[in-house]
Image (tube, rainbow, N blue to C red; front, side, top):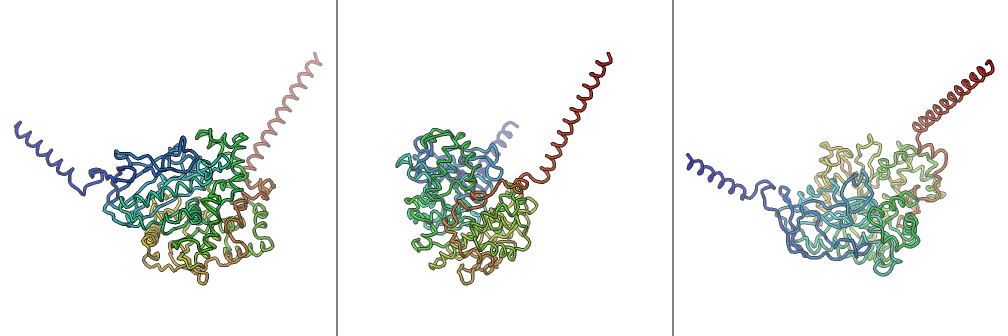
Length: 588
């Protein structure tokens, strides 16, 4: 019996070893993938038919002597680097929209992630640059998981770059080492793209076929890269989602921001900023964001060196290497901020009127009439939000597409009208609504967009469009013919469940802005919205009432009335007792 038992144990052990060594089993039993990069080997994880690698350093950590300076090459390593989970986000103020409370962040954060089909060879490469207003955001966001795009046949890369004052504060007065500090975040992105050119073939990607996708700040970054001659060889085509060359800062702006930052810190000299630790930097940054600069404090800067002139001018001049471009926006971009500023839908028309007057001048009646005709169901507050959306997003995108088309470039335009389900649909089709469809991450964004059959079909089609474009083809999907954009037909892909191409949608509101260039100077960041515009009367009684809200004001009045009534009652009761005591004293 003992011999039989030992024999059975040996047989089971042999079978177990044989099964565990067999290929094609679950990812837990497959050997962890190891790829050799120019700096050392990285060991990733298997995700079914994909390989994934996380937290790969594309530059030296921007800490110590490298803090506030341009990125430099990482130190090489010999043993496989564990690239098995996301790295920390770059330092930022916590937000339920971008980085939930308690999520890890660190200044050692400039890393990238790669998803690749297991047997990939010379696949098109997609590099994603996240948004967040240059002050927030992270590649850790589950909306940006690259697995589904990779399953469509691409090698997908997501990257992180320095945010807020760590990556965009103008410290150029401190000497040559800090001459480009106002664009360090952009230099980070360029460093990551160089890493991709150098290393992505080892992951199965085609290093000669790189498409950059950016959303919001990421798309503004790509616009800035289009204006930077040093970036000309770093990518081959671009997709700009809700971000344009119309959102670039000047040296005057970046200098004003630095002076405001130093003042908020209580410093007289900018060199004192270098001594602040991470928490102190964020504390001062929060004060800065709560002031006049609001959420446009940090943007890429026309510094005369990295970015010699406004990118819109370079695009229009034809100096750019020919690159196919997809550019688009969402119909109700500005209503995204309903999630952070709950009083926006309550603001009276008078709140935005000085800002609108500065933009439209004598054409203001025509502007308002065009929006009422194009979008008759909107409330006055929603019309203001529609104008903010167009001034910051749609019209600069139209101008960029016009400029590319005019020089014979290949450009495609889209307008996302798919609705968000958040806030009971009050946001319409807001900023970021296209992202879960681009990445096929509807489940991760199910509180923001519907995760139903029509949405899944739309996500599948959008990914096909983006992937076909990344392959070097005209963007295509089943049943969709998407022509190039030109000023004759203005073919625009309407990105919603009824995916279709429409000629010149919302043409009245497009035509009414013919007097403005939307090139980063006219208007500039100081007139991005009523929040930045110095002429906005934020202390008007109607505005204060809207900010407080009728319900809160009524409740406050009731509380005050109750306190007054209680005070009067106590005073009356005390006076009565006093009179009673006086009466007793008189009788005695």
